[in-house]
Image (cartoon, rainbow, N blue to C red; front, side, top):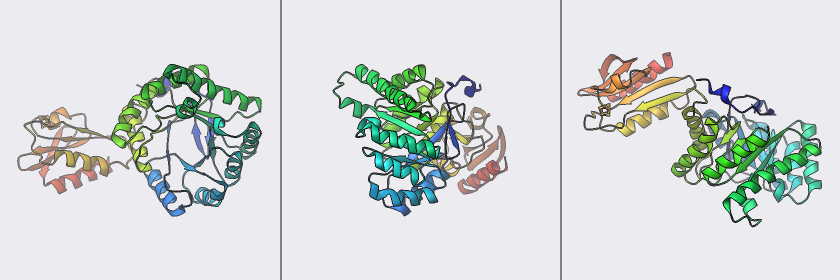
Length: 353
Ligand code: SF4
C-alpha cells in the first residue's frame, strides 16, 4: 500500500534544503544536548545524528552570548540547524543572522509582539521558516486544569499565533503542539490537521527515559502518522540525541511510511531454540545493519526446524542449528557456520543485495 497517497495535504516550507510538508518525505529531527558553548561536543552529536539518518538538527541558544557558538555550529554542521529560542526576541534575530535555517519560538513566552515582528521580518528577509512551538506545560500555567480544556487552549493558541504571523505578512510557518500525554497529542494534532494546512511537527514532549518514551511516541506519533498526519517528527528521549534518530527511523518504518533500512525479523524463541545468546545475536545483527538505507528483511531465528520456513519472506537470515548457525537466503539453506562466520557472511550478503 502506498501510504504517501493517504497523507494529509499540507503547505511546504524549506529548511536549509530539506522540505517539510507539501508531500515531502517525513523528516526526522533531534536536538543537541551539550551545554551551549560546547562546540566540539555539539558537533559530535550532530555528526552522529546525521550518520544515523537525522534530517534536521535543533540547537538551544539560551542567551545572546551564545550567538558566536551558534554561528560556528551552523558553519560546521552537515545538517540544517534550527535555533531554539525562548523569552528574548533579540536572540532569535541574532540567530537568523548567524545562519539558522529555521527558528523555533513559542510566542507565548516572548516579551512583546514588537520583538516577535522583528523576528518575522528578519526571517522573511533571510527566507527561513519559523516553527510556532506551543506546549501543554506553558498553556497549563494559565490555569487550564481540565485536560480537554487544555487541549482546546493549545490548538487555539497555536492557530492564533499563526494568524497573527500571517496578518504581519509572514507565511512560512510550521506548527507544533506538544503535550506529554500520547492521547492528548493525538487529539490536539488531529484538530490542528482539520483546522489548518500548516505543516505539522509532531512529538510527545518530555516523554521520559528511552523505553517509556519509545512506547509513548509509538502511540502518540505513530497513530498520527498512520492517519496521514505529520510532516516532521522528533522523538523526545532522556538519552543521547542519536537514540531519538534511530528510534524515529524505526517508527517511520513500523508505521509503513518508509521502506528503507533493515527490518529485522526475530523469533521470540521457545524450547527449540538452538542459539544460547539469541537476544544478543538479534541485537548485534540489528545494530550492525542500522546504518544501511536500502530496504532489506533480515531474519534471526532460534532454530532450523521452523526458522527458515517461518522467515521465508526474509532476504537473508540466520537460524540456530545443532552444530552452529545456519545461513539462509529466501528460505534456501546456504550452509552452517560458526557464529562469527555466519554473522560476517550475512553482512556480506546484505551488502551484495
Ligand atoms: Fe521456537 Fe524455532 Fe520458532 Fe524460534 S523459530 S520460536 S526457536 S520454533
